[in-house]
Every structure is written in C-alpha cells, then in structure tokens.
Image (cartoon, rainbow, N blue to C red; front, side):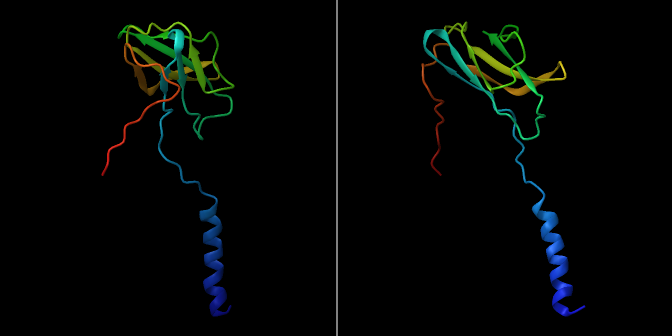
Length: 132
C-alpha cells in the first residue's frame, strides 16, 4: 500500500460515514396563533423531521385561564394548521397541540401560545428585534 492510499482510503471512508448523518436542531412544534376577523384564530405548528408519517394532531384552546377544550372532532393529519371559528376575542385564549399516534393522544407539546384579549387582527405574527 502506498503512502497516498494509506491516507486517502481512511479519509474517503470517514467522509462517507459523516455524509450520512443529519444535523438537526432541537425544536418544539412551535405553536403560533394569529387573530383573524370575526373572532377567528389561525393556529399553526411545525411538523418535525422526527415525527412519524402516521402522526395526527389535536388542537386545544384554554379561554381566560380555564380548562383546555379540544377543538377538532378527529385528529388533523393532512395539514399543520387549524382555524378556530369560535374564539372569544375579548378574553385571553391559549392554544396547545397534542400529537396522536396509533389512536393514542400524547402529552401536550410545549409551549402553549397565548393570544391576548383584544389582540389586533393581522395576517402575520409581529416579532420585535433587538439591535445589538
């Protein structure tokens, strides 16, 4: 074995092993809720790379700090959003999402997202930035 082959063979093997690994961030489902017209609230969340193909989701609303109520009649499987048609915009509403796997609901995916009472109606979520 030549000097070059002794160096190149281990490098090629190592590069093949490293190439197959994915680097992933540690993210939550990132629930967000945006007030819409007529008391509706658009709720959205992330589908994570580690989520199984057969995952479904249930959406819950807690109004004015009360008990959370499930909003959808069956697990949501085709999209990662839900439109709440019955939110009361005069009180704070918090939204959470729970994964459903094999007909079994998992614990709430943290954190919940709160929409303040009287929040402005927008088509976007405003995120303030700080100058460094």
